[in-house]
Image 1 (cartoon, rainbow, N blue to C red):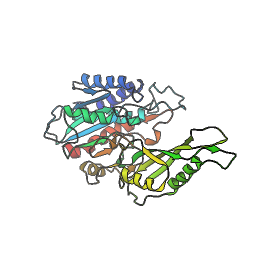
Image 2 (tube, one colour):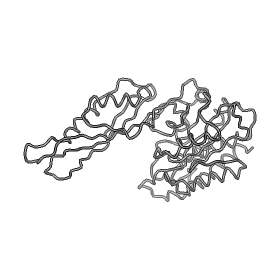
Image 3 (cartoon, rainbow, N blue to C red):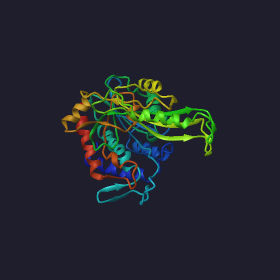
Image 4 (tube, rainbow, N blue to C red):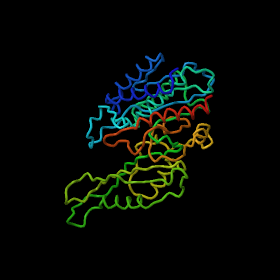
Length: 364
């Protein structure tokens, strides 16, 4: 077994290699290759489902529950404000620069180092599965969902009631115990066309504006102690007709809704449908709000280490994993998707050490 200092160096070197390989969502083949061959070169049997790479600890015991260590290896497109080459990893002033370094490369390699640390250990209370998944940035169907579904042919995840996950995202190594769900609505207001110079038609744009005012002002009553209130935001509006002298008969607008754990998507939709005239069509109901109980062993272990609990307004694969999961990782969410993205080297070092310290309290 490698010592922790050696694992830290291995993680940093691996991250520099990953940054140098473009891995936009749905284009992660080459980083999946790198992770797959890295595990095999460590003497570990790696498995792959499309661009999802995963492995189990050496003494895997089907009678035991499993801890899933997961992060994603896809990235968004480089921010237009980059002044550096996003695919040229550089270490300067103890910072590692490059696209995906912070979101979520630091978590990805730190959790891999943790997996290597436990890989050959015997007499653990839990199994460990490491998974580097794809398409997280677009909530794609060939990422976490596909991995959870197809990996069951090897070892089912989430079937044992004590299974849980650690989802690596940049949280400054604090514990995101709750995460808001996301539902995007395509809304269509219908009217009747007519000539703008005459008293004709029924303006669909005006109807949309009335609905938008209601969405802006409505407040759902139940407020989560971790996630706060449900938040609805209209982010786009458009009419098909572009002529200045025609009353539009159709107007579409998009509503972004961040849902706390106190409401189901159906409850949200029912309330909206009763109060607006527009036709409402949700794009998906997959990205549900999620929460791991405060008394869960991994949360209690984190609290004993001085970690703080909070609710995350951003979404991740935590919503799709299908088991209790804690979102926690090195790096800062505020740096995600920014130009000249970076992670501090000591964040990776501290992340690996803290992960091990916390998991030790549960797994030994």
